[in-house]
Image (cartoon, rainbow, N blue to C red; front, side, top):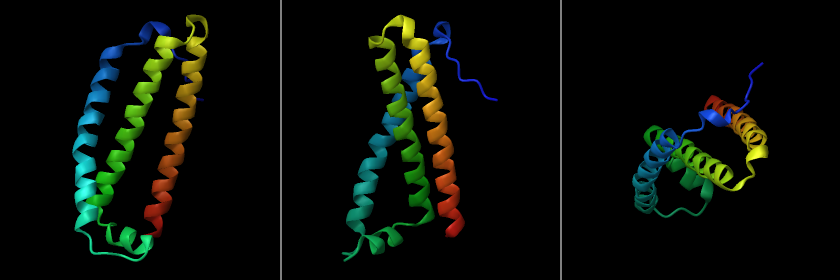
Length: 120
């Protein structure tokens, strides 16, 4: 069984800061790319037609990477908020719960990706 017990001694802000900067930089490049790509598409009457036209492999890969970086960016931000503002005696418990929820979210996201790409 996987154990998600968070040790308060091991909390370092340097790795988290680097990951948050990397994710911010990618998202800073991806969002204008997304807007440009959508604006370059011809006018569609349904959302399904637009989504089908945007389902190119390179755009799908860039979108999946952006989704991952959004999750990383949010994870680091909420983790820092928890470290800064929660009482120290309950912090390890809350960070362990947070880690567990993120592990479940990751498993669910991987299942969703496998399901979606399995049907294409």
